[in-house]
Image (cartoon, rainbow, N blue to C red; front, side, top):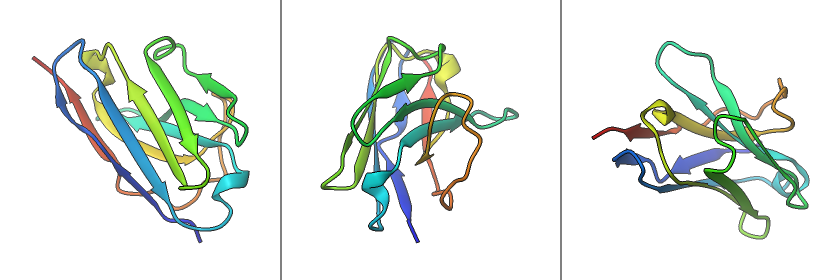
Length: 120
């Protein structure tokens, strides 16, 4: 069973940056494509970035050029560097299994997420 713990969220002004981290337990982490998701109030959860075990990345159009996903397989960590943040990036961010932007499961059990609020 894989457990996921997200951290690094907070309140940031428009144009600012944040780096999110996701710590995963379990031995199967390194063989899977991982992704970062977000869910804004009243909206469906969406996949914003994914990274394969070998480091190939994919991004939603809304974050392309501003966000960067990375991973450390040895430490079982996934990161999301978020730059040039916009108010519309405000959401709870989660990590989980990922794939192309059309990915629709399966998933590990969802963690608690980390809140990102972009506001002046």
